[in-house]
Image (cartoon, rainbow over all chains, first blue to last red; front, side):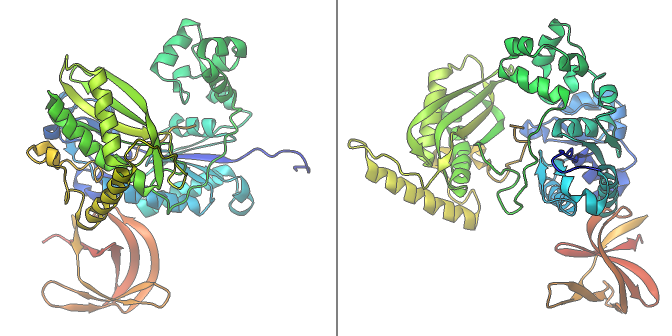
Length: 424
Length: 80
């Protein structure tokens, strides 16, 4: 019995749809269900990597992210199907509707994962584990795919639980068993311990999550800076970040938008500034239009460049004044590029991103010497073009610079995909 | 093996937004009246591959699943 003033542990579920893309494809194509299946990008567009694979393909050693030819080598009978993002978006939404039956606090983490805070619904629907069972059964019956669910008192261990046993499983991590389930595992399994953090930890003899949890906090801060505190809290189950409630009607998966960006691996390598300009304009068209749709100005523009040796870098710069004008953002991006790249190697992929967002109702200091009239006209032009694109498609109005080249037909906005946003 | 067979349906739109299928139009011109609906719920069809609102219908004394997978209707048909 919980007394007044005594704090009750939260009940948090993390649900992860197993091999999401592949599971949906297998559901819609019963004839391939019993075979090894992978969802892969289009090799002709040079997106030829494995995006997801089913259990059979996984057993044959197929890994997400590897090239299609590598996967075919490991698993000769592998069936590769193209992705169908609209279907995945629909499934993602349907799954959230199911979680919403148990709580209004549902926080998506990418398309196939969500945290659900059921603290306030255990009296109605039963314990965390019972709710997990109900959700698991409903997803299986209604959507025809399976989920792994982790149940715990914090988001980190809940997520860990959903990864612990797959597929179609429920793992409950309590204050009694977390030392056994979580602490004995490799530190690399913890959220936000990536390749390089893991390497660093190994260097100091920290192999398991338990060892990380029992490390001296000052030492971790010394090595990792403020991330040291975060990791230590994660490992000790002290994370108290809330599960944010998600507004279904608001712009896809993001709530508080921190940045907007698009990137693309181009159908052929970019060898000169003209090519790069085409791609930057194409990406900026999409980014700036999305920026305007969200009703924000950006203050910083960043570019991402990856060459054909797969080396990549990011550069960013502040704008003179907040802006949502396609032209200004594109010019800043081109400027950044010219100052930072010498074409020592051809470019394979590029990205444009805007951050430091402020609402577009924020007053902006005009300046005496700049051409404000031109900016107003540009803004009107952008609005008009947005209107035309909404009515007739994103390729209805195109920049002259993109017209001669088949790459000009790429539609970054339509092809836009949602990735997990940062945990913070 | 069963096949996903998309079919034209005549449906009634209720005041509250509920959609009730009334009649299925078969490709050879036959029309099948839906005499009764026992159950309506979201369901996936593992048999033919699909997901939508599943109606358990009584048609000519047989129980048949009819799916509304927006914006199309389908039944789990037999392969010819």
